[in-house]
Length: 190
Ligand SMILES: C[S@@+](CC[C@H](N)C(=O)[O-])C[C@H]1O[C@@H](n2cnc3c(N)ncnc32)[C@H](O)[C@@H]1O
Image 1 (cartoon, rainbow, N blue to C red):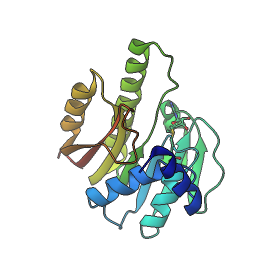
Image 2: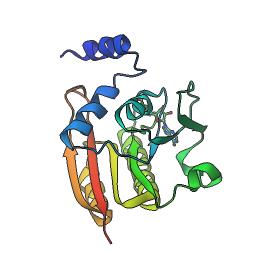
Image 3: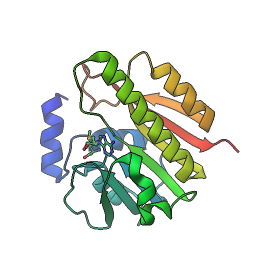
């Protein structure tokens, strides 16, 4: 399917972003369970992934954060904050250790200076991984967007230090020319 057709399909289905179809494919490919108690959506705006999780899972509690504001979604608790400041959000901190799934589509604003962008992506990825290891229950799952650059191997290794299973996936809805790729981590090491 052409890239624009994904956007059209998202509009038809009432989704706020074409990114929904990437998550849909990952959920299907990795058999993500429908029984998700608490889900944390990092970099959630405009809200496509949160919408999809609400639809997919059986009555999950979804917590979403973003630097940007996001229009409300029924059943999603949204907090406008930087991922660095999660510690200040009491209702989110209560979920430490018993979150079933962390999804992160976080992407920095690109500066155009490759070295700076690569470093910013790595920093966001590492913050996501730390958040996932703090919040997930032992059987928890992390789905995180990263990019195919010189840090990919290093980040995958960092994920392997936290999760027993780490897999990589490039969804069909992800533009071919885009360097983005998703890592899926399952089951925390004891
Ligand atoms: C690709 S968009 C997410 C799209 C979303 N998954 C959807 O389906 O609608 C990436 C988001 O990450 C957010 N972001 C980037 N850096 C962030 C940070 N440090 N803390 C919180 N959000 C951040 C951006 O504001 C942006 O809205």
